[in-house]
Structure formats: C-alpha cells, structure tokens
Length: 492
Ligand SMILES: [Zn+2]
Image (cartoon, rainbow, N blue to C red):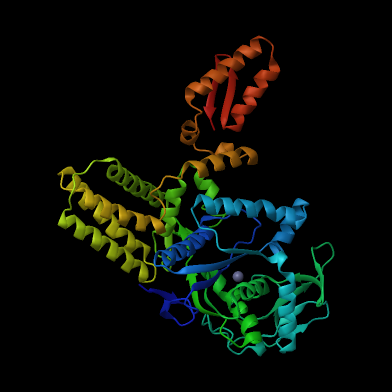
C-alpha cells in the first residue's frame, strides 16, 4: 500500500516512498517557543502525526526531524520585556509545548534540534553561500541572501514575483508581502541582544537559515519530505530551498506537504476577535484532550477546518461511541464461531479505511467505514449474531484505526490534571469550568464544609486559618461573600 500525497512542489499527488528504501527522511518546521501553542499550530503538528502514524502502520520507518526556534526577533523582544535571558524565557514555553504534544498524543519526532545548539552549521552554510556568490555582507556586518543568484526562486509557492527589485532587502524573520527581497541570513549583533562570536562576525542567525542547516545536518543534502503549515510556504520554505540548493545544486526536499490553517467559527483566529484558543484554554473549559485531537484531525489536512464548539461536542460523542463499543466487545462473552457477514464487514471496513488514508490522508473518509462497522456490529450483538471470531476480527480493525487516530484508549485524565495544575500556578483558576472542578473532586459539599470551617475559625479568632481557606478557595475559582445574612459562595 503506497501513500499518494499531494506535493506542493509538483502540484499533484505523488507516491511518498523512502528514496533509500529504508526510512522516510522528513523535516517538519517546529515551534518558535515564545508563547503557548494555539489550536492552529496544533492542527499542523497533529496532521504530521497522522502522516507518521499511517506510514508506520504500513510498515515504513520514519526519521523525522523537528526544529525548535529558540532565538528570533519575537523571542528577543519578549525576553527583554520580561527581563530574562532568552534561554530561561524559551525553556518554559518549550516544556509547555512538549507537554501539549503529549496531551494530544502526538508522537515525539526522532530528532529535536534547537537552533541555538547548531550555530556552527549555520555559519558554515553562510560561508558556503558567500563562496558561491549567493550571499553578501552589508556595512553593519549582517549577511543577506542574494535572490538574483537563484533564478528558480518562487518554484514552490508558484507566486508571480515579477515585481522583484534587485538588491531590495528585508531583515525581519517574517514578511508577508508577495514581493521577494534579499533576506537576512545572519544578523549583526545589536547592543544588549543575544549573539554569537563566529567566523562571519558577531551576531545571530536569521530564522530561515536554521531549517536549511539543521535539515541537511540530520537528513543529508536531499531528503524525502518537508512539511509545515501553509503560512510557511512563502517566504520561509522558498528561502530554505534557495539557501540549500544554491550550495548543493540538488533538490532539497523532493516532496512538500502543507497543512491548511483553521478558522474558528468561520473567522480567522485572532486575539482581538476573541476567538483565539490555546490547547490549555480548551482543557480548562472541560474538553477532553482526545476530543480536541479528533476534532483537529477529522478534516483532511488540505481542507479548511472550521473549528467550533459544536465540532468539539461531536468529537466527544464520537469518542464515547468508540469507547463504549470497544468495551462491549472486550467485556462481553461470545459463542465460538464466525459470522460470514460480519467477517466480510470487518474486512471491507479495514480495506476502505486504508484506501482512504492512502488517498492523500483523507481522515474524514477513513473514519466513516469504522463507524459503519460499529453500527453493523452493534445490531448483530443485540441479536446474538456476533461470534468470538468476529469479535477478534473487529478488534483488529479498531486497533488499526487507533494506531492512527489514537483516541479509543482513555488517556484523558492526565492532560486535564496537568492543565489544572498549570492553571493554579499561572493564576488562571477563574477560567476553569465549574463542572471540571466538580469532576476533580471539589464538590459543592466539599466547598460547604470548607466555608463552615472558615466561619468557625473566625469565631475562634483564628484569622490565619480563615484567610488560608479563603485563599485556597479563591485559587480554585470559588469566591466567598460575607453578608449580614451569613456567608455565601459562588464559582467564578
Ligand atoms: Zn522551517
């Protein structure tokens, strides 16, 4: 079974197979660790996880590299504002990022590469570009890529870059204009900024050079697949191609996969629109990590996903059905034998499931035959027509479904516990859904008991204990109000 995956570079579906016949060498752009990841970021990481898991299900090993951008314009700006060295500033968000991936059951890539730990490779690449006439240094000591040295620029995004001005420069890590500019490879040190003393001067790498240098360090000059969010296609990925191919004169990545961004309630997600969600926001609202995973992967990666709270509720119901059905099969007792109709249904579900995935990772079509099988099998069970061999065949189908979807086994308690622990430390308890607190053991009765204890403590003039109880409850989002009619409490 070969995966046919859309290739942005060729503009068509191409077979995705390891060139060396052993392991698929792939690079996926990782996070810039300056804030908590939002659901748009995680949609991309989840779809790459779906790809990895499907490849492994079909017997293909993967060698997957992901970078961590731990130095860039935004990080330097935020760390300076927080009065922290950049390493200290980014460590907190890097840790949070990996916790979030774990909550979402995203497999860890084989290789994680931090930009700040690979500076010598980036310097080396700038030197090679300079030797090839594709890089030049400006008066302030910064280095730029000379776009005119790479006539194929634009071949990935297929943008019309006719308005390109020779020698026009940009030193920002991100730029959105449809016009191309010579871009910064290396930025000369500015006073007070983190910098490295190197053979090409004191400074720090630009964002684009990181990915070229680290991809080639771990995967070689030419590798199988490069993946990332659609917003990275231009200019980041074009720049990666230009930097790499100007030195190697070989195709950098043969196959490019881009995951479309999501909308929330039909609009672009943004903080100012009030529809911006991190994974942690959703966990604190009481949604299960598995439901968030399922909602974010159920729409195929090349389609726009409109994320809504209804879609999360649907995912929650779907997971309930899967888990209830799975439990019914594993705990029920079934007579020996096989029902030919169910054997055929299980076989068809498995074949349809694999066929949908191998057609450009169509997660929506891959889901459908599994739920059809659940309906058929439930009816058969009700009528006593499901036999032991059918149970085994259907459990095997569910196992292969869960090898990619990864939602049947209930691992939801830990992400929720971790999110609550984080909310307490970060002073975010007021955002926690009341049902979640009740679920976590803070029942109305428990609160009543604490409030009564506080009243007693006050009568006994033990004000320290009374304040302690008030603070503890406040941290969990419970407000106490003293009035002349007595003490009342409410959940924030
Ligand atoms: Zn990248």
